[in-house]
Image (cartoon, rainbow, N blue to C red; front, side, top):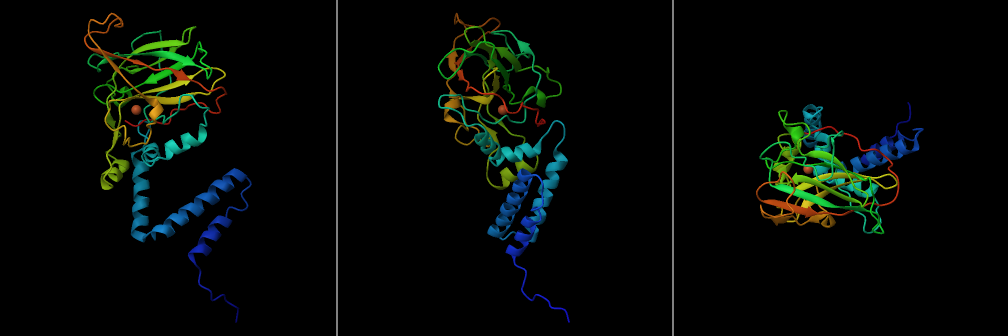
Length: 305
Ligand SMILES: [Fe+2]
């Protein structure tokens, strides 16, 4: 009779076998990623004593996430954002010197290829988009020297809480544009005062937020990516200091250094930009870039309509 091992197979044996299955992976980074993933995934299941029913539910959630994702909606990024992973990866990737403008999430509404606009030009293409906001400042290096020719790639939502990419009928270039700094490092553009908005919450992420008692709201912000040769590209936001949800952004993107004061201005203010009528606001915002080169180009992550 053949000898058999009467010892019971333990959970630890299963984890060890799954980890060891990647020992022969020729790519050391891929091996590290897969083995660590298995260890942490198994540790999670063990820690919570994951039930078979909960395991089936997890599979159903992942399946629904794939099904709702298409060219205009990226539910996987929403999961990453809502679980704080996007901000963590961002923090790990961008170690910046003190004083440099901090980065934050790209978010799902970035669309590459915004039109190049002139200094001071409005990116508001539709009436009723919101309270006009003159945004201006300088792009500087760490010693305060202006950086000419830096590009600010800007996008934001309107008073209806939506980005143009979320509305098929919208002017494609509404509330987005690329601006260059002048020789003295200054930039200016006309936008609208941003408003808080909920992340798309009609899918699996929204159901998770509801089930766990979390709200889907983000505080009011304007997005920008700032690029200049010889400097690290920074993907960031400007947050409105008066906005709701600054202390509970559903994607954890608020950093105190990115919060700014919008100044309320009257209709007859002589500094009013051309084309701006009625009440308006202004916002001064300098950006400090860290020296270096980009490691990766920003890519369109897919959109969430
Ligand atoms: Fe946003």
